[in-house]
Image 1 (cartoon, rainbow, N blue to C red):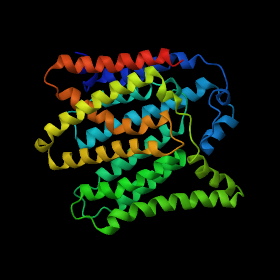
Image 2: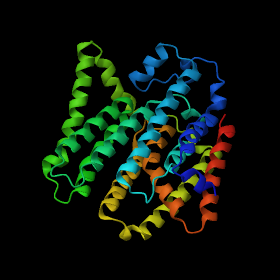
Image 3: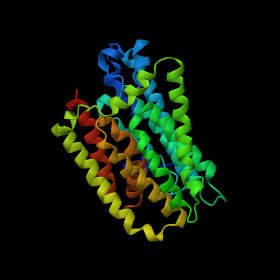
Length: 327
């Protein structure tokens, strides 16, 4: 019943999705402190700029919420355009919110959400390369967008290696120019970025971006029992969904199978970013982008609706309980 309610392609879900997001944010919106008193670590110039203008926490929360809504919109149109799920559904949007907002620290504006927007745009650009005569422009655009994502969240720069891999998967006879135009797009972005710092005599700050990337972040949150339990719940559902999609993989259209492969690349590639010392719990935002489609596929195609509803209820309740245990 719950899965059927949330997956329906009806108007009420357009209103319900942001309402669910706001419900997760209610407690955080009550904080009256300045942003720099709550989240003082400036991992990018964007963070530092927001701290400098002295945003209140509730203002940062609402800005972040606006970005989350943009992400949800992109998830919706990507599925509608490429149809790798068997129906148009709002369920990926709910899955993303339930996981991304499960951690109260992610309620407040974080650059990884902005990076997620550009990673989704990069994935969409790659998908558009299917059945085109040549995909040089798509590869370049995906690399450019990945470079922009890395400006906001530096570890995302490593996802550039997924672009030629994805182009090769999507196009059996992809040329070298199609595969590696992505690196030109990324270099172009960072060339402009470095030039800005050089011209403004702030090149030391540019170097510090990379120094911060090898500085170990605080990962003690992963040792907390509630977080371990919650991530275990997500991991179990992910494993079940992965096995399920493997059983039906051969019955899918060729294009759908290739899209699913690319989503898998971005899921595991994003998880691999945990090897970057500066990465902490915020990393969960990037793998959740493809994971939202994977879990949705599992829930809407399960024959026994009872188990689909149960898994979704457990996921929601776990996220809600985490709101109180991590305060």
